[in-house]
Image 1: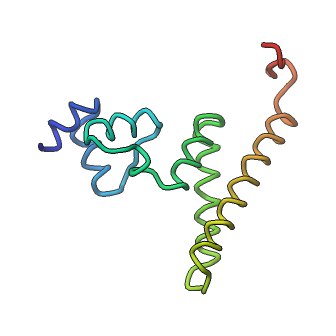
Image 2: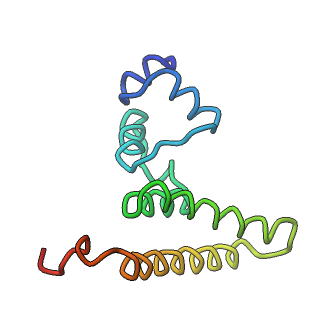
Length: 124
């Protein structure tokens, strides 16, 4: 199957498929990944790293700016440990803690800085 055929199958252009293949762009939503996984007859989890899943979750809840912030945090954390000696398991635990902290900060800031007229009530 060529890029054009695959793009048609998953609902994107040949150019987007090319960008995916060269890692210059990535699918933006879980649905995009699900369509790719279905087309390839593989489990969607095979396509996603924990970091990608984290960024997509942030994007779905907090938009593009939230995702950009999450990517910056992950990049900074990776740079912090570049060339260092840390066991893979320890790095996984550390990254999970960073992701959990980021979610909590985004939630707190949303509650703190969203004007009351735009806040949803619990029974909405």
